[in-house]
Amino acid sequence: MDRLASHHHATSLGQHHQSRPVKHVLQCIDIRRSYPQIGQAGLGRYRRQKLRVSLSASAAASFEQPSRGSPPSVSLTESLEPTASSGAVAVQLSSGSAPSPPAASLPSSSSFDSVQPLSRFRLPNLSAPITWTYMLSYMAFMLIMPITALLQKASLIPMATFIARATEPVAMHAYYVTFSCSMIAAVINCVFGFILAWVLVRYKFPGKRLLDAAVDLPFALPTSVAGLTLATVYGDEFVIGQFLQSLGIQVVFTRLGVVVAMIFVSFPFVVRTMQPVMQEIQREMEEAAWSLGASRWKTFLDVVFPPLFPSLLTGTALAFSRALGEFGSIVIISSNFAFKDLIAPVLIFQCLEQYDYVGATVIGTVLLFISLTMMLAVNQLQSFNQRFRR
Image (tube, rainbow, N blue to C red; front, side, top):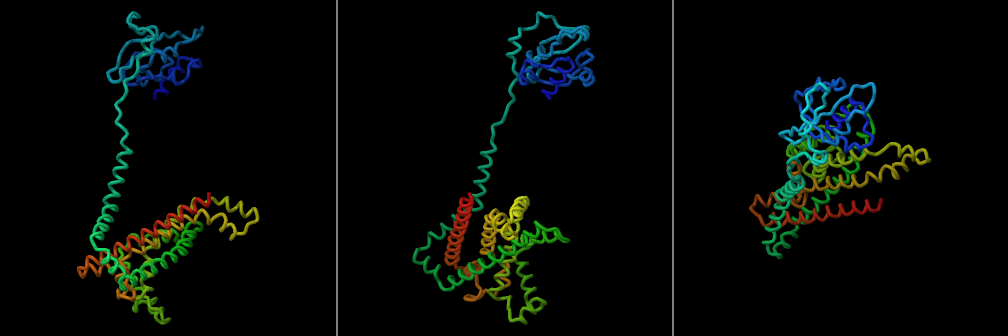
């Protein structure tokens, strides 16, 4: 508004302020609505809008009418009217008929130039402290404190007891089933999640939006409901379960059912991680590779896949971590028998049911350390891949 008001005044008075820089000329301090007496025909817009313009002396001096023969002469009458809010000096533009204050009341030009608007009160920038406080508080309450409590509970257990309970045959077999099934589910989701994300991004077909929305179904569906659904679909009473049993494939109450449940709950992670990166890939790069004689498979391996590999690795790691901690669906679809399909989260639950808090703490601590080690390895692999690409 300041620049717009100064520009309209300069245009109406017929002067192009070329001798002064714009940032010094356009020193409009305050614009507020009032009812001044404006008689100049060239200021019709300001007369209609009844605007009172408060200017500094240097800005008012730049609006003086040049000496010409035809245009009517306009006098700039400066009146000292400090405003209540900003302390600016008001300068009224009027014709010869308008009343003007006595010239004796005007200060010198230097005093006008020294007039500065009162600085507005500004609050300190608290965005960074507030953001850091919120982030640290959230991390402390949601992540650091629970892990610290678990480690503090585990530190009270003697080392010999800890090692003996962590290496029991039941616990070792539960570790094996948990990590092996989680790895298989993550690899399957890596392959088919990549294919589904590619289809959703690159192709248009009827029902695309419905399929895209169905990908997020495991996020919204309770895990116990997912386990009940899978047990029904692959059981004896459904067509798919009967067909698989006729082929000699048993899904429910076996490790295969555990893998199916882990695939179901961790499937969206790879798809949702890959989709944004695939949408950012420019098709012009592929067309350039084709124009240089590269085949479609060569273009995919050398042009398309390298930018997608870090996100694919991230989605696979997220799917693996989600499958590793699954409990609700597996406790329904598996038999939960030791040395058969018992996983570590279910073993912790069984220890708690038997009031074996030491065993639950030990197994939970072992899972925490193994999961943290694998996540750090995946992050290190991602960093190495990024440095290699550079």
